[in-house]
Length: 625
Image (tube, rainbow, N blue to C red; front, side):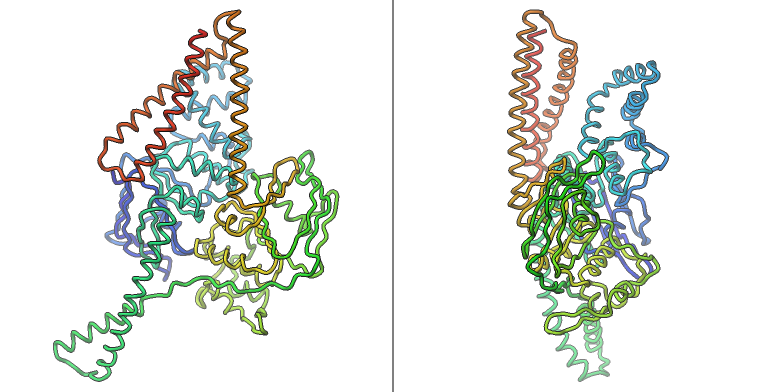
């Protein structure tokens, strides 16, 4: 089933053509990633598909299947500021969600018992309790807790998480997501990754998270030079197939150049030829000339700025303590940095990672202990907030306000315009106002202003947000060769695995653990710990059940809680049976791809395992009853 058909769609801003006469089809069940350089029009294309902007072109067509329910996550979501968090997340036409909203409101304001009883009755009638539990799980996973707080009190990142929660709760068939992993911590990203792998979801997203692309997507669409290119497979397949395409293009370009030189010689010898054959040859030459001149080089950002030399003493933390009220951020942290260290910082949102960085750079004083900064240490601090500039400033003015030129190795100098060109701001773009830059272009400019100061100790707080994959690759290569120290806070697992040698793990209550290894090593150990903890919890639960059974054999019957559990299990078993039958039915389809068969097999195994567990528990309770 074709969910989306895009035909001959064009979009321009002034003289800039973002894309021209592009076509794209997305079928049910496909998981598509849209990749492109910053400023190429990724967000604009998503807005056109989601119906937020009108396409250009007389024959332009955007068609969505009438049965597909669409959910769109914008890069910067907007909410009605008068709503509470609860009202915003449960703002829906769905009857069950409306009932849950009334129930949650009655729970928050229990003044009138009749309202609560009415809400409970409505929940019973609509069989909404399982759905309510699902909503609570989503809100908990995305760390959305203070439901009675106004939306106006939320930061941009919190609003993004709220919008994502609202989208998942509404359960659309076709999700259009613009940078869904921005502002999520690493646990949230892994949970979202697992959720999006469901075979019944259709997905179109823009993301720079390469593990996401590798594990979730089965089709990648590249927007390049105003045209779209489709690559079946995940991120690894995309890299291979894209390099093959570029090799083919370059080979064709070389052939065209050779032919052009021959034709040029002929044109120069016979400029006044008027015969039919000669005229056709002149026309062919003009077409060939246009083809060769229209071919562009594959540009990449160039970062070859080298930091100043570090001294023997770089940065030392001696028994640092910091709290805000009862909340401990750092408790007794000590560390001495060595040359060329690459440290990653991980921990949930709100645990104090940014505060910790500000303590190290002496922006914030610790409550106890001290920070000692070496005499030759020069910090380059790339912040989450990004660059704060007047919107009416030109790009070139931003750089020249810092320096007209910067010194390079061997006594060379690089002027401000030359430096901007290395960061993919050509001479024309250098005259553009900051207000006209895309999110990724602003980030790139911010990074440039940091590196211009020739630091030897880089602190990068979420540097990957809004940067395209090409820029990320170059930044990674630069950081691996950087002669100074690097501290990175990022939710980009691929970026962290590639750069860091060890981690500072924020475990809560001010405790920071030094872990020797990258993020994937850390998560593997954490998952094993979590599995062991679950095994221990199940063993404890089994002991408790056996104890209750022994007690009930004396007294007979089920407790009130167990009767509720029995009913809940019956509903859950029924749903699992239905899903098992649906999957089995899907296997009868002859149009399944190998990837779809794999996904369905995994889900079927998971459903059967869960069904077996719940049926076992139901049998235990039924026997007691």
